[in-house]
Length: 265
Ligand code: KIV
Ligand code: NA
Image 1 (cartoon, rainbow, N blue to C red):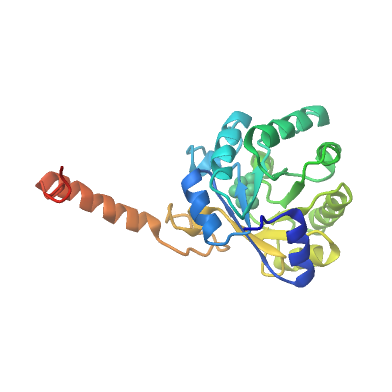
Image 2 (cartoon, protein in one colour):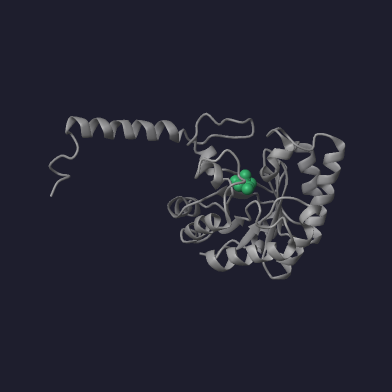
């Protein structure tokens, strides 16, 4: 099978074919998502939330991201695998950013990286791109800045923030990014940005005009069924299904129904 590349994504944008992206953090789910035809697997730092149970994405470390990414890579035959640079691994200066980027690429076999922010981190983006590493941007509600934002509300509703976002998107493209995630911004703004760029935009809570869509796997599968923001479509209620299956198992063990003769040696 042919691997999805930055070039395939570029071609998809040009042809008007939407790009599908989901997060993945482990080998088993990566295998399922890859075989189901997801174009891009994102080893998101949302692993900090859904894998480790932290309130924010800030605590996850570079070593932990490398562990998740190397597991996902082993399950992905066709999907392109992109890895988030975690908080603290790239903001201080561009040399540290490049060193973090190189560690992920070398130690995981991933196909590209994602970083949050625009102008503030543009030197780091340029340096990583110059090393031959594909970089994706991330603008709008960037969760590594949650304590500055104070809430998970929609971003860039005001003209000043919208203008900065449009400028940042162009800067990221000029710096050599192969795409950008737009998170929780008005659909009209995402449309304008998408039309202004040659590189594809991938939206989450950014409306239907982006070149692709991304969701956190756990959210769309309903693993935490109580998390239901407006932008989310829940394709499964996995929480209920898992609970029912596990309750049945407990019952069968307690009653002595499991294991039966056929399940014994
Ligand atoms: O970490 C993550 O899951 C992400 C996506 C929501 C874009 O960055
Ligand atoms: Na992320």
